[in-house]
Image 1 (cartoon, one colour):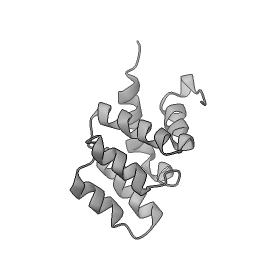
Image 2 (cartoon, rainbow, N blue to C red):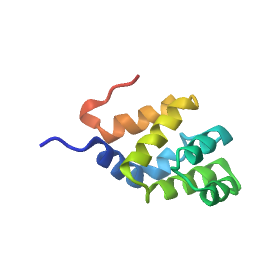
Image 3 (cartoon, rainbow, N blue to C red):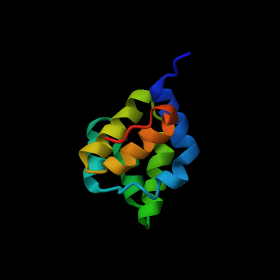
Length: 104
């Protein structure tokens, strides 16, 4: 049976958020893309931005993503790619689909 790639990615984010939090640079550009794409609300962006450290900000972001739709999670991966964080997007692609691990 074929797996739903987005559902697999969502499970991956839940399971691997601690490791992923070290790969993500929660820049203002990333947050703007997520807010403009309606992945995060203005209040969620403010909450993420209030983190004391990079890891705090990334952890808060990933906790919000845990409650998002598959489409919103795909927008997150696209936002990573658009903000020159291909390494983090590749990490998600590779670990969510271990049988299809392809680095772009």
